[in-house]
Length: 83
Image (spheres, helix red, strand yellow):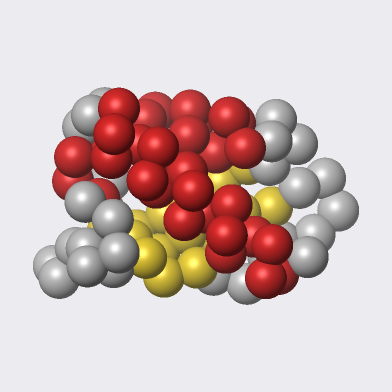
């Protein structure tokens, strides 16, 4: 479960990618894998799973700029594969 502050950081990252996207579901499990389902006005994309080996998720959700940029890049890459 994400805290309100973590979710706010994640929403900020998603909106930097596209203001048309919103978070339908976001979870962080004990292994620090972020599962994220993004939607636009018409569809929801399949869930994305981002591991701590790919991005320092804790730092990104705490507002650390370098980690946030890494998470944003990873999300952009994943979305390109879905569209």
